Image (cartoon, rainbow, N blue to C red; front, side, top):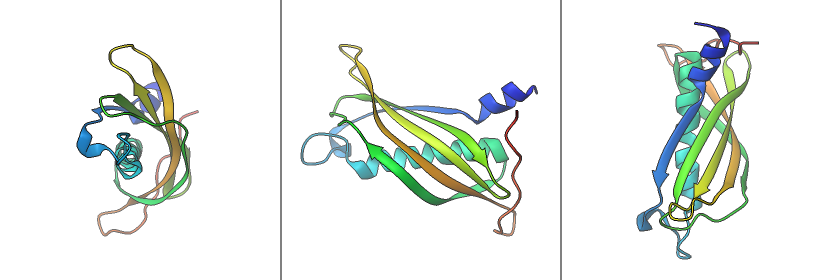
Length: 131
């Protein structure tokens, strides 16, 4: 596998529809649901990169910049942007699309720290990012 192919396999794109049970009292995506989808995408990206069991150690710099109305399509994009010895920083974006008009915008962006675990549940080394 080439370095760029190895990098590409760690990128994740997930799509979801915002249904009423995902919404808050204003009819927009509940922040907790957005975080759950983002954390899932970060988990998949980190697992693909490390090929290890991973856990979320921290979420940080979560910026909710625009509401996401019920009925919207959201695309969650996650990529590993930095590695440490046992941890990975994953950048996650949540984009909103109006399916009828095609209008899109970035709604939420955040960073997640994921830690790789060995078979005994202890932190274990992860591969560096390809250059």
